Structure formats: structure tokens, C-alpha cells
Amino acid sequence: MLIIMKKSAGEEALVEIKEYLITRNFDIHQSTGANRTIIGVIGDTDTLDSAELEQMPGVLQVVRIAKEE
Image 1 (cartoon, helix red, strand yellow):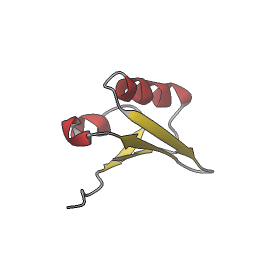
Image 2: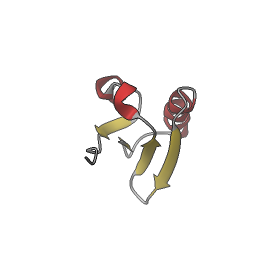
Image 3: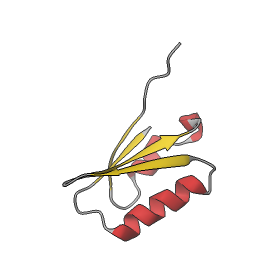
């Protein structure tokens, strides 16, 4: 799963979403570019509600990665 943050997302929003994921036992990988920050979520993301994540402050879009069969 990828969580794409808004350009305007502040450090507080990043901390909040990272804490939310870490307390639910997910590993994360943050990639910060010139215009966007993307958080890669590592683990069984089937238990995460994309709509709930998209409502969190600073989140632009949540993208699920298709599972390989």
C-alpha cells in the first residue's frame, strides 16, 4: 500500500500517520521528494481501511498494490 501525502502536509500529519501505522504493527518506508512524500506500508494491509486513511490530515490518496498470485 502507498500513502501519498498532500504537498501542504506538515510534519505533524506525517508523524500522525506513521504512528497510526506503527502502533498497528506495520513497517513503513518514507520517500520524500521535492514535491511529495510517499509512505510505503509493509505488511498485510488487508486489515487497513483505505477510506479511513484517506480522511486523515495531509493524505491525498491511498493506493493498494495488487497481490501476486
